[in-house]
Image (cartoon, rainbow, N blue to C red):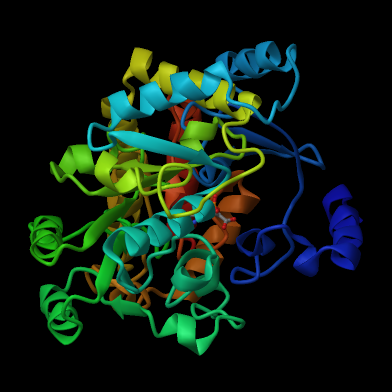
Length: 425
Ligand code: KE4
């Protein structure tokens, strides 16, 4: 029995499904998850000493690769002074100043401990600010696991066939309107049917939890126009895309100014962090200034802030986005060329350091078309890649991530392995 298998057997006794987050469980691709004991650069080193080229990047945070010396040193320095103070600390101020500088739509920001907390708090803030109850989300978008947002959710919820989680009261679900992504007519109809009742619209401006899907030209502008007309708070969930596709995220690429933005992943440098911020007139409704309560024992934790500050400073110094896009294009071309030669239908949407593969001839532009992807082909592709040392997310409904550490031999090797895996289908 491998070390991973024996660890998994023990984990299954004590942890539901043997994992602390469902998407890690390999349930949609089959087989058992491997355990990782170390990560370095573009590599994961498993408990059985296999070295894998990693395209999950701990689900987004590791844009500089794993275990970056600058991030490790920043944590070590902070650690000299203790792990948590429960009081304001200097790192929080520096983090806030970096976020506000990177993302101009954010005038004020509140730190929390996960993307889920960030989106849950942003929804509550939009409701408190507008004194309305209903929110709009989009099928396939995943915003973490708070009750109002686990409706037609993506990521692990979609992967495991429960996009509408049990345990969410019908009374909660009724306040969440779910629309198709990229559908202006559905948006107009929802606002017409709920005049003056919609507190907020939350969207992944580029979807990363139903595979990677980008908006039709003009869609985000239309969303901004309609939400402004109705006094509805527009929330860009950039937990995944923030600082990954540009220093200012998708809102920089698309020149859209949302009212609120949620963040996470990269700003923690691999430690638990979330954040939400935006217009000061909205943010000032938060306690202790205003009536919307939100809190967290470890919010602004000094170790997490130090790690995130180091990660953001590296982005400032290296500005790696053009390089990351070139790596993404190299990989996209390799898989599309292989699929064409094999005569297999494949979509490979890619922008910067994010991409995904849909085995379908149907252009993927929303939840419904994402589901036309051949999951059986993806499963075979996933395992062939893994057998040859390349690790993709164990689900067809996730985005893949590149880091600056992938450049060179690792990316060349990954292109060869993925192309060969397609030829073997
Ligand atoms: P967390 O609570 O997992 O930190 O963040 C929730 C979240 C919110 N918004 C977006 C756009 C997200 O992608 C996420 C979390 N992403 C998933 C990966 N698709 C996390 C992986 C997992 O659930 O284990």
